[in-house]
Image (cartoon, rainbow, N blue to C red; front, side, top):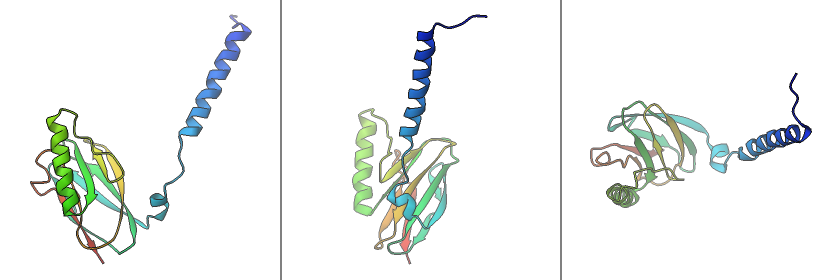
Length: 150
């Protein structure tokens, strides 16, 4: 039987404990938006199309929008009014031109690779909120969801 010296056993135990602590510290509590979401709306991303193209959200209601990319290319979803969409379209085009990629993952947007899923939280407000895909050419081709107030 092969036995490990005591120092090696202690080192391995310490590494195991650190691994468990790191895992525990990595889990974050639910965000305010997550706990405030009243319902989930499923959206399918296909190549240059969202399904559905219209969703309804009551004024002040927060919904979880679950995006599933069933297409063959990456898509993103960015929440904002028309002015924000136009500004974001320019920003994403500049990023693509600078070869920085076109990842749109932040509080107002997500990038979803083919076969993957992601979520955003949308709070209903005044008319004019849109969710647009800003991969090159997609927004201009009509890959937009209209968020209609109720």
